[in-house]
Length: 118
Image (cartoon, rainbow, N blue to C red; front, side, top):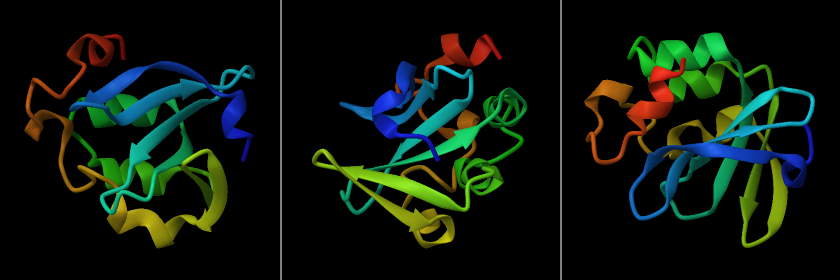
């Protein structure tokens, strides 16, 4: 896992008065997602790839499935500037909108323009 502070935000994928799902890129070109956690304990960061994102945007996978597809064994959670590592499976059920397909979410929340780029 890379340092979260080294990630550059590309855009929000889901937003409702704040980022629910953000897309980030590391200087090496690796893509990362940040998902807001339902319990308010921060965001979890995990790696992804263009193929998996395309499946998510095409509603072939839920966000929870995208999270579990990550190659990471550990996921980093950021809360109030502090970062901690967790076993990925421990945070699975906390991911906001994790059980929904992209197309099932309100169009007001979705970044369809970004989705069309995949």
